[in-house]
Length: 420
Image (cartoon, rainbow, N blue to C red; front, top):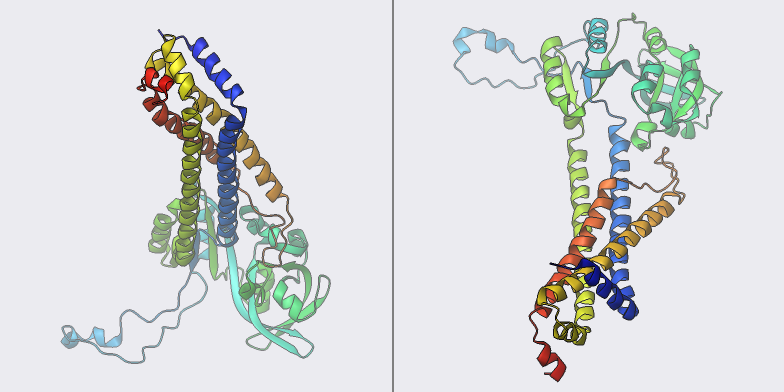
């Protein structure tokens, strides 16, 4: 029967008498795990930040009427050409309405759908921004500002003014930050816009919108849906786009197909809209995990080397233990206990150091105009990383202790005492 009290007491004595080697081995575990926690927390936080920058501003499903050529050309109506190869040059897109047919009933259907978190109507139109002699082309988007704020983080991107200010202003506009900079305008100023028909309307700037994507901020602004409908002279049911947020984003492709078939509109899901971005995100995650695993493996080899040397320094102690009646298994358990104690202490200290460094990085100021919602470096505090860290510390020290201790239990104590 194994006497764990004696074994652990001997292991403790060995660790205390060789304090320098013990501390060195523990520090090897500590810094290996601490570096892993810090690196994976920072890289994952950075990836999540880049993902959110795009995905938070992208609807899960986008409904609109796409301009495209007529699928059935006049030549296909003649039976005598049915089995012929049709070569038609300069096919023009068919004339169709930009607005979504029966948009209001569709919105009502979506809002009653249990899978849908929210659906917001939009009216997009091309305009010109006028300020003195400056004339800039761009887009004006009519939105239900409070509904947009409810189902997305749009409020975070309004760097001047507020959503409530736009809601309460009949002729208000959230001007893109790039446009505001080019025309030297700020909150409270007025800007004139001109439609493609030449109609001019003055609007008051109640806020500045900064998405962090320069190509958008240089051309796009927002106003109330009714305001844009009035500018275009259209009825209240004139809606060109519907943005949908779901409770489960993974269901977007299936629901998009169903909506396109049901309402005869073009439905683009988030995977289609961000295919290239998704590929880049997967590659970044792959690099993160590859670097993290490599770091853990390197730390594991360091731990093994230190523990291996520690055990070989104890060869005379092994001989004495065996000579006094300890079995080879008892000797192995003593050194395995030492390794596990070092792994536990080093692993816990590594988690503390990793968390501390992560908190330090998380409080370092990081401000850039391209990322208006970010004020400090991004860090992910996923508990899974800490579980992986302590598990690897214990596993690596177990392996690092088992290999040399397994050899030590077979050593003949007479040969050690003789020095052969």
